[in-house]
Amino acid sequence: MLSFAEENYLKTIYHLSKGGRKDVSTNSIAESLHTKPASVSDMIRKLSRKKVVNYKKYQGVNISKEGKEKALLVIRKHRLWEVFLVNKLKFSWDQVHEIAEQLEHIRSPLLIERLDQFLGFPQYDPHGDPIPDKKGVINSKPQIPLCDLKLNDSGVVIAVKDSSKEFLQYLDKLGAAIGTKIRVLDKIAYDGSMEIDIGDQKSVFVSGEVSENILITS
Amino acid sequence: MLSFAEENYLKTIYHLSKGGRKDVSTNSIAESLHTKPASVSDMIRKLSRKKVVNYKKYQGVNISKEGKEKALLVIRKHRLWEVFLVNKLKFSWDQVHEIAEQLEHIRSPLLIERLDQFLGFPQYDPHGDPIPDKKGVINSKPQIPLCDLKLNDSGVVIAVKDSSKEFLQYLDKLGAAIGTKIRVLDKIAYDGSMEIDIGDQKSVFVSGEVSENILITS
DNA sequence: AAATATTTTTAGATAAGCCTAAAAATATTT
DNA sequence: AAATATTTTTAGGCTTATCTAAAAATATTT
Image 1 (cartoon, each protein chain N blue to C red):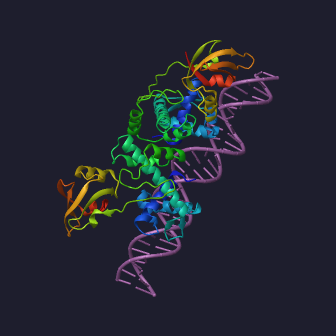
Image 2: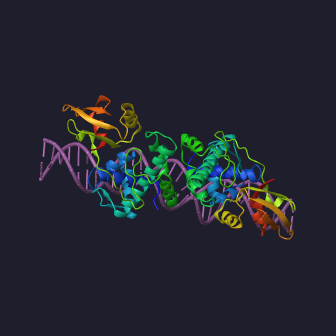
Image 3: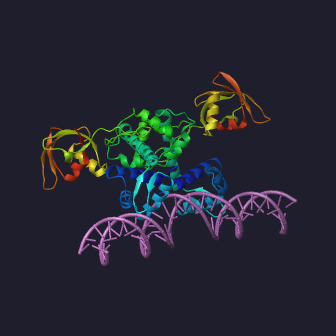
């Protein structure tokens, strides 16, 4: 059985190996977890002994089949709890991440099954991320970063890449919650920023960084 | 801030100092927590340094005002989560203790407030135990152990002293859930067992141990 | 009250998870 | 390809929470 710390490492390795390529570096794990590379080396050896990652010294790690299943179960729990917090307890989408970080480690398969049922088998969490099923299978709709849209393209906000409080509160302020229609009015080559129309209501400028973190379905 | 382990010790000390008298022995704590007396000595010193218990070597511990508040907050969380599991997720009363043991350590004052509201501000958990309010205040109805009733006395099951799976499943089998009327048909002096009428429906014999763990309101 | 038994504490280990500092391996420059 | 820079690992410590074994204090018998 994995400890809380082991689950957190595994989850991070899973997330990092989605964005980048197969092998994940020690430093990137340390950075994600706000820990030191030396601690990561230790933990990786332990995860390797437990067969949840494949590891060759100095070569980075990649997650094993078994490890991926375990990571996806933690992610499933995290996202289901987020739905609970928002839909049932009326939290806002920027308040739930930290609490779900704790709740995701509660061990009880029956609890998760019942929670899933209680919530009506939701497919997506409040940030638009897909919820893996019991077996870890994810079915996600295609998501395109806002920055990749062409001039005059439009689409609907379907998810966010960054779930930080700060970013979500900024989106709230813009009125660009999930489900909002967005159209590209202008693309500024100089700094990658964009002028966009939000919900056919107002036009605003957003930075390149923001446009990378808003995910659109067309 | 207290660790999970510290919270568990504190909760146990609180419970033990309710049943017995003021000073709680090292051995009794060790027994309750399935740990060794040496470990308890260590932990007590730590809790004492943190001012949540009063401790004089070889004299046992008693919980401080501050410690009692913290213990009651953990108990509040435990009992609210039990209500959630039974009322919302349709768990049976014998399934919830272990899960609540995990959930009680989740740290988020807002979460507990919202959960309380979501559940309709319940006063009692599924085992009949009173739920402390935000400030740790408990208002509990008088509870008398079944074994203290006189011949022909009757009352309603209001709570159970033992919340173990085994005991609760036995009560289910008897049909003696909370709210059930019970009348004393006979008291066997020899071994402390009793013959009782359950819900005006059937008469059964229960052992002295069982009759100590069923709490009645008259 | 002396002897014995019990309880409690201390001493010394162990494992998990983290750290800093130094060494080793790999990558990048020149 | 040699020198330099970066990344990763190892070595050695620290804290928390546990343990066993032994010592010290308290309780109970005789």
